[in-house]
Length: 143
Image (cartoon, rainbow, N blue to C red; front, side, top):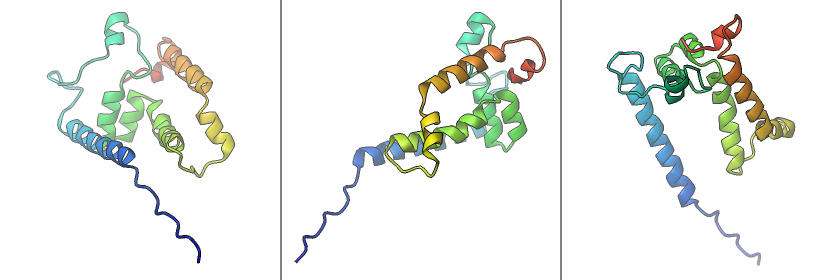
């Protein structure tokens, strides 16, 4: 008689973190649907780096971009932070791969996405480029 295999273990910590992430994302969508970060009385905090230096950081415009996204304004989202759509596509496979899931992407793609040097160069280059005062770099600035 063959030995019965044990049922797969349920991962309580992962389930709890996933549930919390879904709840937090839902709350974030609700907040962004009900409050406008562009309004004068907005409850959202401005960028501290921008206020201190007058320069845009890589995240400048992200709150307004997400506000545009939850209202279905894809053009407005890209206008606020052009890097956000690329990050929105790249982040889920990176997280799933980090959790041990088999992501249906070629190994070379996953190695590239998981390479810290890629993100260091990309974010630093984006940070510099969006502060240059000449066309075509001016379209990288929020708004």
